[in-house]
Structure formats: C-alpha cells, structure tokens
Length: 297
Image (tube, rainbow, N blue to C red; front, side, top):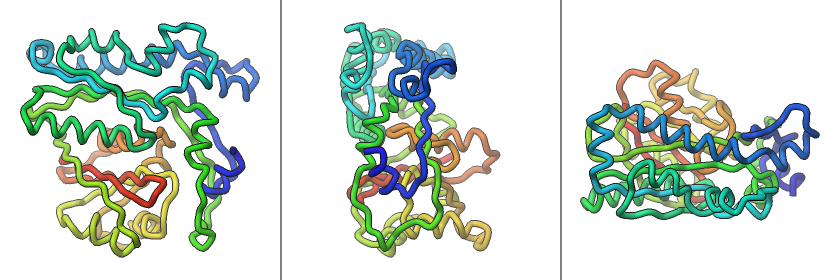
C-alpha cells in the first residue's frame, strides 16, 4: 500500500509528524503507535486558544447563545488501527470529545462528520446553512487529523493517468494537526463563504469555473497533495505574470493534514503581510471533483 501510494503521488518517500512520538523509540514503531494522550491534550489546548481569542463579552454571549458543535476528522474510527488501551480515550478520538462540548456549554446540537480530506469543507457548509437559516447563533467546529500511516496510504492508493505524470519527484509529508473554529454572523477580521462542489471535466472548465468567475480574487491557495497541469502552471507562473492572482499550494509549504489542510490558508494569511483582499481556497478530491471557499481579509 505504501508503494502504491508513492506511485500515485509521484513521490520517493513519506514523512510523518505525529503527536506523542519519542525520539529514542524505534522509528517505524514510533510512527505507527505514538502516545495518543498528547493528541487528546492538543485538542483541549486548541479549543482553549480559540476561546481566549474572543473578548470577555463575546465569550459570555457564546455561552448563553444557541450554539452547535461539530466534531470533524478524516477517518471516522482510527482506534482499531492503534494501540489505545482506554475505552474513554477511544470514544474521545473516534466519536465525540465530551470535554469540548462542556467547554463551549453546548446544549442544542452536536454531531460528528467524517469525510476524509473534504470533511472540514462539509462541516463549514453545514455551519453556513445553520447561520444563514437562523437556527443557531454560533457553530463551533473542532477538527482533528490523525495521521495513521495505513489510512494515509489507503487514501492515496488510486489509479493515475500515466500521461499526466509529474516531472518533479518529491517527498510527501503528513502532519498531525488540530484546530478549533468559531463561526457566527458577527463581524470579525475574516469573512468566510463556502462555494459549491463541482466536477469540471477538464482544466479549461476548472479555470473558467474557479478562476475567471470572480475577478476580485487576488490569492489562490490549493490544498492538494496531487497537482494537475493547471495547478502547476498557476503556481509556477507567479513570477512571470504579476497581474494575475498569486497561487500557492498549502501542502508544499506546510505539509498535508488531510481534512485540516484547507484551514492552513488562514495560517498563511497570519504569517504573511497581505493587504486587504480575497483568497479562494480550493480542495480537490480523489474523483476529479473540487470544493472551495472564499476568505475576505
């Protein structure tokens, strides 16, 4: 499965950065069975950091408002593939972390969404509908990516067209990450709007649907491990065509984090001094389809 995944992504190796690894452990065993408690603790820290970014008044409103909680991960259940001895910890990873539900005082609605690399996008679309319909005042999305090697390889074990083989041989990198995002209709530094899922059929259709549809876009970020010809063209031609929107691939910069890879676009905005504008983040699936969302900053 490892060899097939390398072949489909045109890579010569795979690196993993996981929570709870020990430097003095046997490398393969360290990657396959790290200490999972650090992973659980990181989710708690991420949610606490999200709360602390709100003002005291906003935190009070959040606790007293109608709030929905969505827990997102890539695999649904990863416990059977790992050495987790605690049933409580298994439920926190594979079903719903109740400690986070209590932290946000959620009493109205909770659920878990699983959808491989598209799961965060699916949760954001549900959150957008809930807010637009006035069902909830806030939607909290806690997302986590567990980089279990056998699952990572299985996701990329697909048949590829030999004619579109990439010329550059690269090293894939899977990085475990967690994130907590609080969405509401209140004004904030970032405004996010989800687009529609579609299957373009060709690079020409992709260009017209995603890039020429909205001339206000000044930054395009791809969250794709495998790049097609159009993506490579846009990323490589940044220096040649200054008038076009800048294009970057988040996974080339930060490493791949499955469902959390699209959220790296917001990290990019934090780390780079960008003037006010609009960014479009594009997520490709394994079947030729695309999801995207826009961020005004």
